[in-house]
Image (cartoon, rainbow, N blue to C red; front, side, top):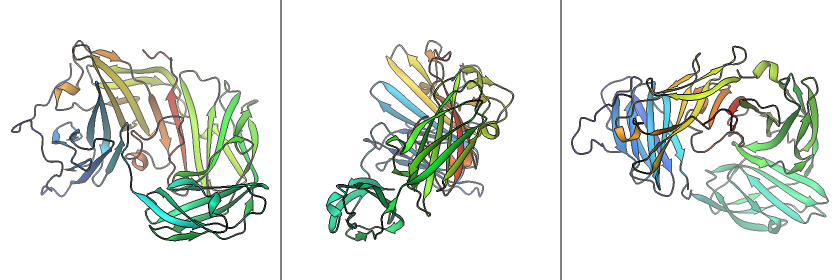
Length: 423
């Protein structure tokens, strides 16, 4: 059994969601935000790297809680829905972190309402708008102004307008000022699609088919979605580890393109994906020899004596920089589940240590039924765990479009294949 830290405080031991700054100069403010239908009264535990308690609190009316923490600690938030306790933990938290967890039913975000006008493309019968803050049918905006409502554009947005009729043409605008009540006018000329080539090299020998997707992105959001073979989506037949596919793609000089590669067969215990984003280019090469992760040998298991998750992997390949590990324990006497996910950095050894939470109800007991970890994802990214620590929990799962940030980057991640020894 794991040890339990008892809260030494009056009442239920829960402090206010807004912490008071202590005199220790080594600490800094860490804030966690829950986004869902019910924002307040979610248990939050701030713990030091050794597991000692910094603050036990609950989210306030705005869904946030904060504490002053030293580097390297844990933050855990509990969201209870029906009979399931969703426990989410961030490890190796640093002063200044803003940790965001999207709940099952995220609440409404602020919106931006403005007028947009686009030039007429002769022969076009439909015009669509994709932006970094939402999408809209803007056929009625051709040659005139149309008032539309998008998500919170925060003052600026990347915009992609496409016309369908006399071919597929587009307009692209980067970092366009957008404000409530304002007007956006996108000038001509329209551009045409260009040829984009994706080459795969040194794929694992058991892979014969790769799925390829390319997107034009802005501020991490898709501006051009792959929607049919030949337009940013297709498969590569892999022969002797190599294959090539061609697409017709929008390639605006100032744009950013996200290329995602995933195997369609020969999965074994793990399925490895590649996501790469960079300034738009007519040629993209994905060389697995330089980036492939160490493949899983045995699936992950929860180890009760050490309160950790362990697995084994091959000795060759890239060591991941982060892990998202999910596991479940079922408590028969309450007829409910505890689903715990932890986002943590990777060390040299394939093990993730879980914090001992100060409330014993959130820790596995002797007669609880343990469901071995799944889903389970190892991630290697330029910039390491530091780059993604506060951004993935509750908002991304393996196989979903990678939430690219910045002008360029490279991610390789390996999910555990369903049914691979998972109980």
